[in-house]
Length: 101
Image (cartoon, rainbow, N blue to C red; front, side, top):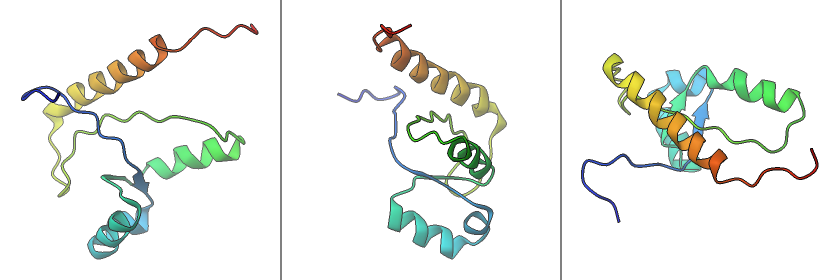
């Protein structure tokens, strides 16, 4: 049950690409088509690196502090980073240790 004032985790695609981020109409259409809740114009280089290294399975945890309308608030950045780190820690702690090491 969601409690008021508690953090929430949103699971959805994050769109990337400079052309999409620059054009508001295109950004809205693309978001509706793929269900993206966020955009990141620098994230495409991270994905290119993952795909270029032939990794077909990965997880990306993002702490996002900017608003949907493009407003940026620096005071939320440390909170977003800590929230993302906490989610990643919970995922890792919930995993079983590999047996083939």
